[in-house]
Length: 256
Ligand SMILES: [Zn+2]
Image (cartoon, rainbow, N blue to C red; front, side, top):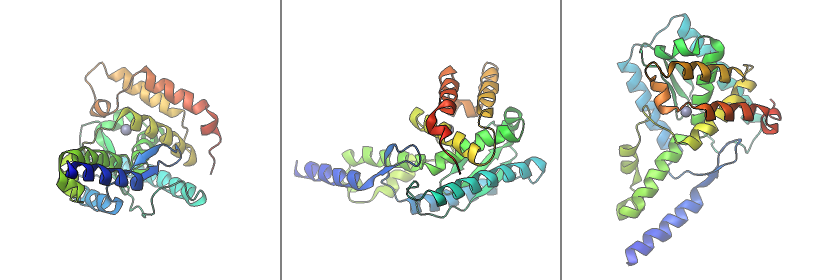
């Protein structure tokens, strides 16, 4: 009984200490796992994936790097002129690679390590489409969604084990988070859509193209579900929410 009370007190203290605000959206989030540690893991996982994959260096790969750099530069420029918006002091080590893999997929790990699979290129079709996907994935990383997810798995485990409450959470987190196959919550998806639209705008892309992209994804969802759709549910609500956000004052008022 005493131990239980201690765990709850400790958990409450940790939660208050770890309470943070997501960039731009201002949504409250709990970030319990250390960002530096998470990023080190992500860099190791990224190196591993790259070593096991066929990394391309063709025209499409150059476009992936170009779009990625445009977005990363715009994001960095924005947060450097809006200090206090970003709840992170870590310098991202951006990297953008195109992998030969027919799975339609793309992701950005914590710390700015991005992979685009050739399988998604028929859906993105051009530079604007690529900017939609990459802005969205970069938004997940900037808003630290995977760190937030890892933090929630720590909290879940806090209730069950006194060991995790004593700071031994990296083991729990290792078991819970595969940074490549991560599936985000709908709340995170909506936030990444919105931040992604902002990042597109800041990088000089047309954010309205997001509607075109998600419609292309939607039309093909009847003919076998692309991987990207299994982690990115694409219903009428998603497209409607994007349209609404593009018309909102919040979006219109964001400028470099
Ligand atoms: Zn997503």
